[in-house]
Amino acid sequence: MNNGILLFNSDKNQQSVFLENLTEDDVVSCCEYKIFLRGVEYCDGHLVKYAEYFPDEKKIKATVKGGEKYSVEIFEHNNEILASCTCPYDDVCKHIVAVLMFILENDLNKSIKESKSRKDDKKNVDNWEQYLFTLDKNELIKLVDKYAPKSLKNEINNRNADSSVALKTFHLVQSNIEEIFKDEELLFSPSDFETSLIAALEKLKGFDKQLPNDIEDLILYIIENVNNAFDEGYLYIDNYSYEDIFESEAFCEFVCEFTGKLPFNEKIEFLIRLDEALNCKSYNTFEDIGENFNNLISRPETEELKGLITDSGERFSVSFISRFYESIAPLLNEEEKVRILGRLKENGTVYLIEFCELLISQKKKKEAYKVLSEFLRSDLAYRNEKLFSLFLDLSIELEKNISDMSLKAISKCPTSDMLVKIKSLPGTDFSRCKVILENKNPEELLIYFEKEQMFNEAIDLINKGNISEHEIFDFFKRNKKHVVPEAEKCFINRINKNLQYTGDSYYALIAESLEHLNKINPEVSKKIINDIRLNYKRRPKLMSLLTRY
Image 1 (cartoon, rainbow, N blue to C red):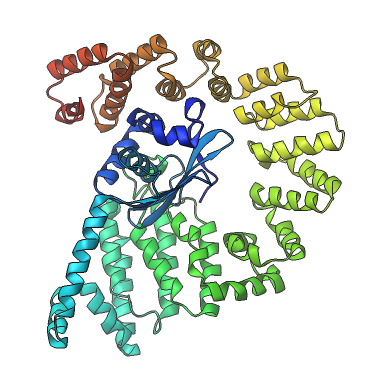
Image 2 (image 1 turned 45 degrees about the vertical axis):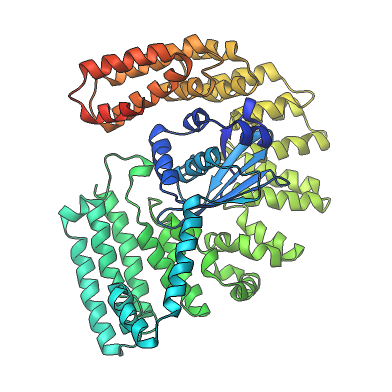
């Protein structure tokens, strides 16, 4: 799970207030509109399977069923409401939205609350189990034989197949998959491609003991050729944005299920190859596999893996170790942690920060400062608030020139949080830092003004014309009730601009703008909706989006 994506600040900056006063408008404002609509579908479809509020931790934990089960957390940190999800999407996703909508409909202040449908389902399950106990063995066999999925029967047959049958089946599947990658019609249709690929792989389930090496090679072949297909312009959905690149949860599940069944030593060898393959790819389509490395190692195996990494760590790549660090960290002593983090610090600022914090706890502040200084001279140090914050705190403790350091920090890390940090420190040139932030990253200065409730300054900054349309819209949708005239103008302009074009993406932008306009000026919103219905009735998809009003 990541460190958290910002949902709300300002008037939603307390968990209790967040729970009591959350509105649908809040949910719409914190994400893309098409993500909001998908999240509503997930909530209405009863895919939020579990949600619990922990008052002491100021945290909500939930499980959402998508292609697999995803864990969502919503929590308070530094007077902000943040969220995280185990899915690969790197912004507010449909699973987070589904949980927010679930919160709107349920009282989470009272221990565990689940959707009514789940309780009804459990009652039905109990009745079903009671019925099964009334059947004798032969009746149960007939029932299972009649309703068991074909894939399950195939997997059981495969487990007991001899090596010649297994090898023959594998070669047929391998040939089929090779043909799939040659079929342009399938490559231009990601959903059909996935259906064909998974149908072929299903025939290999149960052969993990007879043909582990062959299946491993085939998995790596698929990963490599999907990457090659992207390079050649195939397997894209509508456009080239992150969320529209082909992803297959079913393939990732197949890989993880297969890998999890391997004996420990074989599993480690395959994970080494898999790690290398994932690192060579230009796209993050198979990110789910990499994020699940930890889950593929059982608890008893974790101790054994820890021993391998600490005794012969040079054998493993930094990337491989980093995938398992979270699991083995509780088993490491301080000396082992320093040694491993000393390698991992080159692979990510999270490890660098932990390494330096460990040095500081050992009273080695000068050494930590030296490590940070060396890293900050590189180009890799851009935009990491925690890293620069630690550096600034060390600079004060070691009596360095804080004014120069703060200018360096805002130059390399031009973010609103960095400006807030600099403002809190004595001896900094705050005005100059603010100018640097405006020149380097005006969008972040806009965020700073928003956090500080400096709306007049925010509007002045927007009027200078250096902020992108997307960022301006996001600002107005979050703060429309504080800057009503300017927000109304923004929404109307966005509606008129997108009415010039046809297509689902433009219609979604129109509907989203109307959603926010309706919150601050229902009369104007209603007039525009009536005009659209009158003049654009030949756009049925646009008309269907307006049925919400």
